Amino acid sequence: MGARLYCGNKKRGLGSGAGELHLKGIDRSLYTLYVKLLRLLAFPLFALALAAQMRSRIATGLETIKAGDLKADLTFLASDALEGRLSLDRGSEVAIQWIAAEFSKAGLKPLAGDSFLQPVPLVDYRTDRELTSLVLRRGGKEETFRAPEATGNFPNDGAVTGQVVFAGYGITAPELQYDDYAGIDVRGKIVLVFNHEPQEDDARSIFNGKGNTRYANARAKMMNAQRHGAVALLVGPDPNHPRGMVRGPLTQQPGQPPRPPRPTQAIADEASIPVFNVNAKIEEELLGVTGKKPADVQTSIDSTLKPASAALAGVDADLHIVNSLRKRATSYNVVGMVEGSDTRLAGETILFSGHYDHDGLAGQGGVYHGADDNGSGTVGVVELARAFAKNPVKPRRSLVFAVFAAEERGLLGSYYYVAHPLRPLATTRAVINFDMIGRNETPSTQTNGLIDISPDTSNEMNLIGTKYCPDYRKVVERANNMVELKLNYKWDDDTVLNVLFRSDQYPFLLHDIPAMWWFTGFHPDYHQTTDTADRINYTKMEKILKLAFIAGFDFAESDAPPRFVATGQPK
Image (cartoon, rainbow, N blue to C red):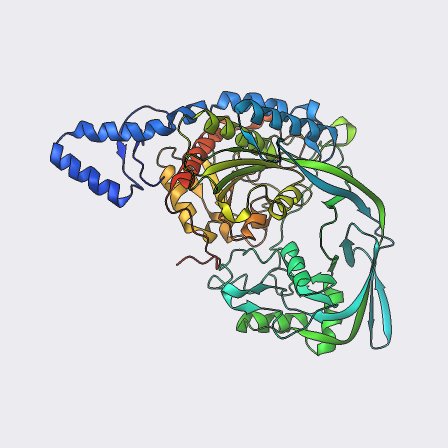
């Protein structure tokens, strides 16, 4: 928070009354003046008065964040009446109108003209797995593959034909001096790439050690292939991936109703190319024309960090996409703003985000309530909007509050927002994204023994993506002196559960914006009908939101906003 002095009781945490003086994070110039004045006046009460004055600037907003209000809001949002808030269904429409009404009551400024609703055009579709196929031709031989050997989802029916080119991991990362497309021309071609990224099991890797970078995501690889002129993308397994290091299944828990099939969704009319996932057998046959095995090719790339990309001589492919269902519809991002107080900096943006959609109705009358995922993040954004609106002192930069559509269907609302920002994207200095901030992390089928979980997580929160912005982490840690949560960064070293890509901060990372996911972790009720409001840790939620209020005020007030580190390897 730049030049800020806080007065709080460190042992008892925020809200426990005046106590010892915290001097972390004070600007050097202010601290020097402060010491000089103390020596000059020899009057300790001056320090207390100054600290109280600084703390009073945010006190009103902080005091409005209350566990009881969070519980009341979340009990409604995760109730049976909202039917699980499935994207484009009635329950999600109710959630949209509720968020917009709360933004209006709080006095936020609408950003979509005179509305809080940014339309997000979507298409609902279901791929016909029997008719959708991949046809390979090589050496005078033609072979057809369908699901599960080759699976593709694409909202538009049609066929794509082209020569097949191998492009390593499909990554172009100039800041890491790595480019799988160097020296090859893929215009009009179909590109085959490995899943994941180089050296993912090497703690010394330039690709974020053992953690994921923003390049390992299949959508990022699709976008990169498209930028290079490819007409389709085939993604095969990285053959040397350690056995057993795979994400646990999202299984139906005992006593749960059956999980109904859902259509896939996509952003309507979005520029994209078809992506097919192919199995190891197809990948081996394709790379076999080079005389090399996939494992040897991967070993070569990982050991040298030099591309092994090449046209696959004599190999052509046809991708046939057939959908049994295709329907256009519109959902909405809900976006409002508290305007900054500094005319010079009010054009810059600090963004608080979450998503309101979940999984809808289950079979046998069940409801996927989605209290933690992500009713908790939704009511968190709304509560912060109220708090900043009520706080008489507004920070220098503007604060935008966005609750995104269709996250569960592929981060569609946030991808749409970064493509159609309501304020220039280049002005966004930091993103605080809430997704599942209401529970205590416990072992589940998702984690499946793949991540260390503390025995007691009742006061713990995970911060994801901090290697891209050490400044962001410092601000949050400084603010946490007032709140005293246990902050955990373990997910920054994850390459199995791919958490970096699984929430709405990720599209902002692709645009070099410091964007972190605030997350209390997985639990056995994740995407089950038992994710209900009565299981939420509201005391911890209140602390998380107070931490976000303090850190967000700091981001919006500081002379030096957090710096993005594109390499993901802060020095």
